Length: 274
Image 1 (cartoon, rainbow, N blue to C red):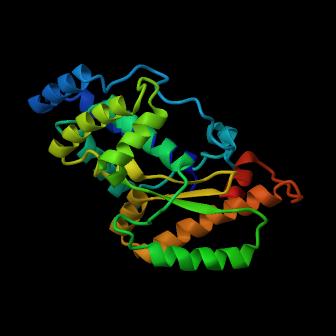
Image 2 (spheres, rainbow, N blue to C red):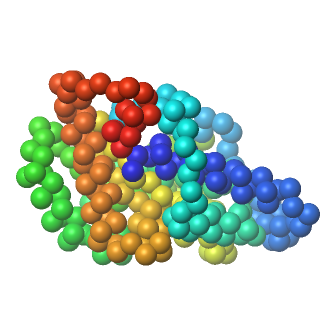
């Protein structure tokens, strides 16, 4: 599953639900206003372009695919996966401490962090897929024999609630922060909000990524695995399927210039790529 696929759907569902909630006659819990005031006064809500300009490695996404009529010419049925995701979004939006800019801030921090992080990793909320990851990586490496280094980052909601990790994120990607001390100050203010919210940052939305980059990076988020498990898919199967899918994109990166393939439409091309 590519990052763009996940986030286009998520953004649409998220904004639709948000619009519906915003048009309702009921106000959110007054506690939300109190927290929003606190967020503003501590300077957590930032101006546009608040993240570092370090570029992403290129990926295999063909952006025009997602704006082509042929790609989405057939209606999609409402699936169990869609229903579970919708429930997560509703829980987040109905949270009395919900704030759209804060949610976007967290999402961007976590996405940037897993894109550029290199170091020790664990997979699953408690590392429950660590051994499986080693086994599958060994198998996929032997099967594809690609001439490139491939590494897997796990994305976790817990990273947004861990002081040192959250401080690393803020210091690296928040342009309004000038030093480590300021990053700590902002992280502590955020963690204070986390402590009173039942959804921030525990909601699977904050770790819903699954994507690959041309530099050999693969990412699998806890939130996506959790959502698939809620649908009824065995966790080991879900992890194996996502990892194998993203690994296949690395083969596309390596061999795309040598494959002699023709497609009758952009939609057909997109389906082959995915």
